[in-house]
Image 1 (tube, rainbow, N blue to C red):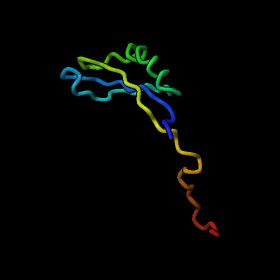
Image 2: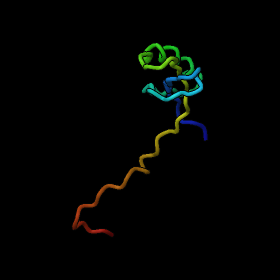
Image 3: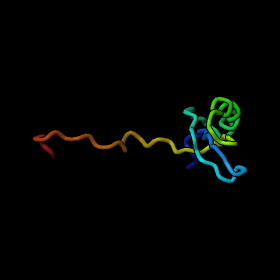
Image 4: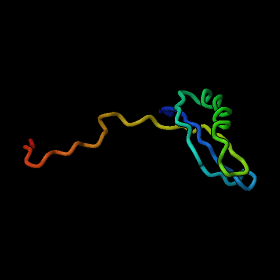
Length: 83
């Protein structure tokens, strides 16, 4: 099963881009890697205020959120009957 969506990670890099640290994630989700890649230029322009010599944008695949049936069970009040 493939990724559910893609996000843009903004990375701050030092040492000639050999050492990069994630500094932000763009909140927009993209349905394909190509649409994500097309948005990286604008994401860099909007997220260029970090204190690193080099800032890069990278598309990362994310899994779709778990189904509603996998949610945490709700607390059962004290004294409630259990079957």
